[in-house]
Image (cartoon, rainbow, N blue to C red; front, side):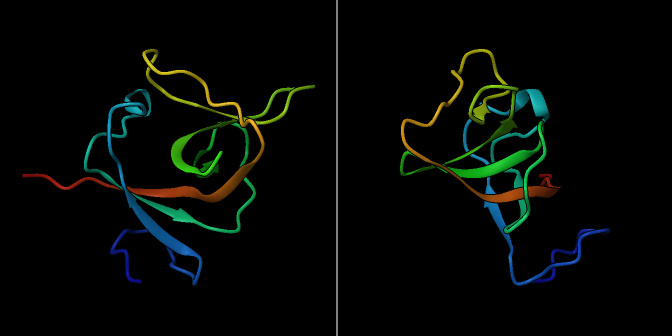
Length: 102
């Protein structure tokens, strides 16, 4: 996949998702933006990730705090944190953003 995004070198694990909703507006991710993600990367605290949480894919901020299991955080105060009931699977870490204008 040629992302056409400077600084992004696609690999077989690179994929894209379209942003839906406004839960990540605090990170300036808007409806219809395209995020480029890299699968197989270990997320760092504060990274934007695509994750499978309780059988649903979410695009949220990855949070790791001492003594607590990792969870996902929306970047809009109107939305709750997402604590997995059973499993949190990171599908990819955001490496770039494409915003279509017009």
